Length: 251
Image (cartoon, rainbow, N blue to C red; front, side):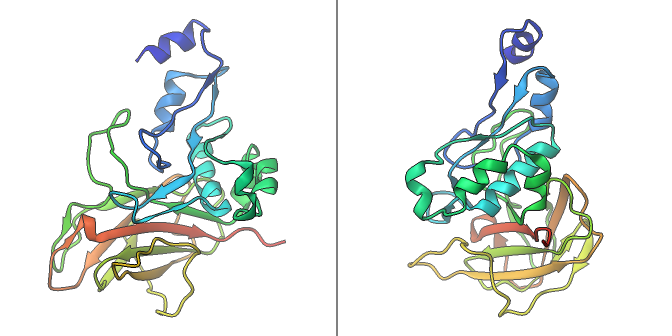
């Protein structure tokens, strides 16, 4: 890792960790980069335009203000100084009418944390710094089992806020959802989903949502587990989406 030496010798002013492909990574090891390049180096992790939930680009969509705030608060919690926005272009203003206002506060960690946030679990080639290559979701979840959890960084300022988990799949889901080992009550099927979520004209999708009880989330890393109650094995590639939605401050 030459970065540490470059930082120590004063050869770099700004460090921008960026994804391997066009998909923002929610599990950047920003903390490691902060250790390699302490202040006064400015640490500015990259938020790209695309959110990719599963291999390929079928299950993907472009950023929203809420997803950008989710990534930004995550990175600030891990030690970032500011945020580098990639592929956020002026011509996109029509489909992202809040972009101009977002640009005015994305550098303010408190304002970012106060905004409504979507902490999306994105799929990418996990060959990043300090971690083994592996799948985003558990490789498979057997019937009547919970085969591992998914780490989600929910950023800062979560106390007292309403939150929920959203999970999507290409198979009907009969599951329990646990956050930090605690069972979360499932929400009614007609509960509105965040907009947008990944969908395909060719493949049917199912989404389930669960309320996260007050006081259960903590700043930074949390763990979401899926207990599969169905009588078949649920495969990683059949899981197409997961996120934690946190409401913004009122007023």
